[in-house]
Amino acid sequence: MDKLEFYLNEEENKYGKVYTDINYAIDNIADFISDENLKKRKYASKVDVIKKYIKLLEDTKVKVNKKGRFKIFNNTDKYKTVLENYKYKHSKDFQQLDNCSKCACLNCVQECEFDTCLGCRNNSKIVYCDHKKINVTRHSNFTINLVNDNTQEENTYEVLVTIQNIEEDKRYIIIRNIRDYDDKYILYYYPGISEDNYGEITDAEEFDYIAEIFISCNIE
Image (cartoon, rainbow, N blue to C red; front, side, top):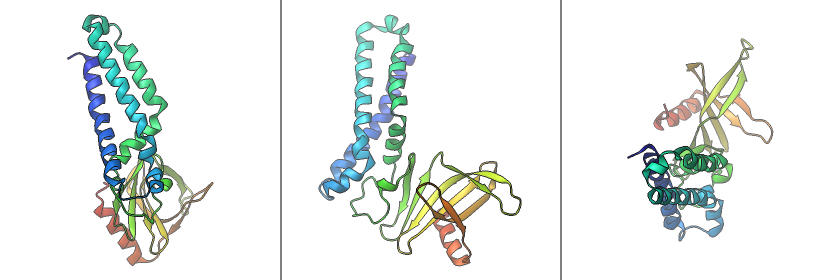
């Protein structure tokens, strides 16, 4: 198997699974939720991006088989460039669809009281939801800069998860210093339109409760 054929098979296997999982989920939940609810789910509106990519992969395979290995050998970069350009153009959709295929909400038929897909950041997914009170969102490539009140030193923190408690109308954020993994914080989270704000949790029992939820998700 040459490099191009290997690449095509790898891409088809990876994104074929994402496409199949999402389509199966849509078929599985369509009879149990409203059309309005279904349309709000990001994967339902974006799944055609992967469908078109799979078609590109299949068309490229046909061309490879027609032209033969010797002629294709000298044009490997050309074929890969077309595919990579498509993925780059739709990179955010590819990232989100990959996350959607692994999201706890994928096959859920509940009329959701949480933020749902409309409140989902790019490149994130729900990793836990009890459908009543708590859900936990795992983030990738989400960082914030905070200034230490004692040292006045600014540090960059990776956002590990955000947690929503709809019973008490509270949100939490768990962050980790990108240069010191032992430097972690659990804070109140107040997302805003132009700026987010954070607050210290002074209630030890509440702090321990949120920490326990985080640990149970096996993020680290």
